[in-house]
Amino acid sequence: MNRRAALRLAAGAAAWTQRPRASFAGTAAPFAMAEVGPGIFVRRGVDEDATAENDDAIANIGFIIGDEAVAVIDPGGSRTDGERLLATIRATTGRPIRHVILSHVHPDHIFGCGAFRDLGATFVGHARLRGVLVERGEYYRNQLADILGFDEAGTYEMPKRFVETSATIDLGNRVLDLRAHKTAHTDNDLSVFDRRTATLWAADLLFVQRIPSLDGSLTGWLGVLEGLRALPATQAVPGHGPASVPWPSGTDDEMRYLSTLAREIRAIIAKGGDIETAVETVGQSERSRWTLFDDYNGHNVTAAFKELEWE
Image 1 (cartoon, one colour):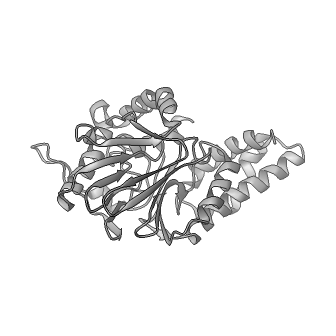
Image 2 (image 1 turned 180 degrees about the horizontal axis):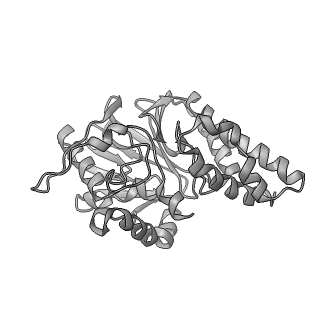
Image 3 (image 1 turned 180 degrees about the vertical axis):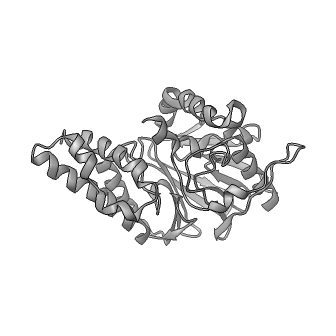
């Protein structure tokens, strides 16, 4: 995954560019969040690349409150992003943060870990996340530091609890079902289902309005989405896009885009066409439907072509 693709993981809320900064005393300012269901709070990320101005606050992150404890789902994309999320939680509830769930390896979701490191919370991730963090973690940190500065880039945390297939977390009269998926958006995607509100926190398995970014398997992603659509969820929190969308209809645009790539690439391969032709032509009917299309479609087509030519 190249630097641009690794750090361009973006979605909505342009007002964030005018957000208040941390005070001179080092106290992070809370930010506004959407409560998409009772006790489920989501901060929508900005529809931008990572910049020094936006602190890599470009992913949807948030937390879920139970009767006894809090679970964070993705601690943010930088030191400041994580500190502001922690300040927001403190301003919302006095219940302890017991779990920090890392949905996958990409830096806009995990480089706020440092804010939660000394709270006694258990960091949770996909079973394959350990290996990917060893392989990519410092590379991502160095690339983000080039944009934000080394201290501001923040840091990641190696999970202490790994999910092989599925697991549950009880926050006190609130059970979360965690599912480790086969290779899709990445090879380490983890989703969270809140039984109380029938809310699926899909993270980057679901992009809405902002073009999906492929760092795993095109066919695998389509398969995972089909499986998730069978869940008894009524709404979902995407990794990028609105704070919540109806389920399963919220997947329609993403499935159409991914299916278009698969169909058009297979047609080019069947005619003996090459990857250059695919990059120039595949998916162009989708161009007006997605933000950042020109930045990511070529990368997606390249990755998908390399996968599909070996079918």
